[in-house]
Image (cartoon, rainbow, N blue to C red; front, side, top):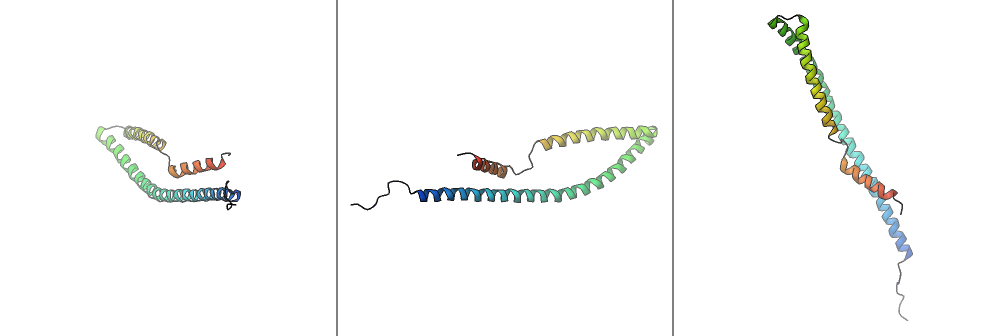
Length: 135
């Protein structure tokens, strides 16, 4: 009689293979969550550092701009012999139009991008869908 031949798959080896695949998928999901968290923390740290410098610059620039606008309004009053409100109205109107244009441009720029790490989020979403999909 010939030695025992394996004609079918061993149920124990199939179970261990499936268990290994599930464990690997769980480990991959954990690693992707960790990567996503790390990327997000890094982006937030860089954003916070940039915002501190930006806020200080805006504050100082605002004071300087206010002083220059005040001087420009008085220059218009002196040069054109306008009443006080005339020069301030001219300077204020120009600044209001300029500010409106800048707000519009800034809003459109914010709409044009997603600040989250797209590739990691897509991979994570794909793995979550695969994990939760009924078999």
